[in-house]
Image (cartoon, rainbow, N blue to C red; front, side):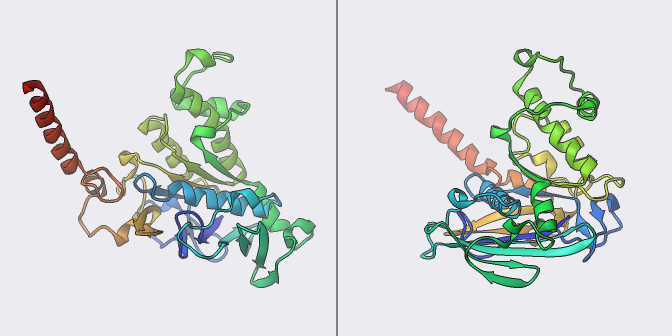
Length: 320
């Protein structure tokens, strides 16, 4: 399971920013936490922000890390922050796999399309070809992790074959689809059918699943049900990290512990990942704050001012 992921000088992120899944023991929602080598981790995390702030950028960074560990080509994917004078983008991951702790980091020059360095379990290697491509004992846990994580972008999600367990999950979510009936079902149902095989695979195999725009086309009850499957006490090693705008998922009473909710904030030319408890005071309702325009939400008060101005403009036009 993944403990933390960090990125620097990649797209929205100029300085180091970290998604930490390291858990703090809690008497509430104990099913949300898994015990792994190196300390407990959260089984799920939700990332919120406004549009064009950095959610997708971060998940693209995760995909770059995943591809690198799996031995794939990342050259065309690496784009340094446009405000940086350096072409060096850097990525880090800490995780546990096969009962052991591991860490991996690398720097890649997006302009030169070249690996500058990589650090494998604390040992640094300079440039050239990735050591993980050797497919030896050293690379095994990293290749395994890279091959058994999935980063999904809902708008690009391609359907997969549905096995018996996936059909059962769809039915339990209240979705009944007849084989070959794609033209007769809604976009949301088609997206749910495309997503469900990845969900069941992650839960069965203990994989990590990252989803961008998780709520795109899906009902709030369906997304909550999927999150609950990962937070279930019987789930020992599967993880779900997703980006969303769905206010119903900002639930720190029944769905998440506070540290599981992350907010991406942008300050001028840089974005950073902040845990919810760093932005919300005790007793404040995060859903209400979202509606007030904080935590990446739309400011309803400002929207009301626009509607008043719009009505005034229409009246003026009508009087003309």
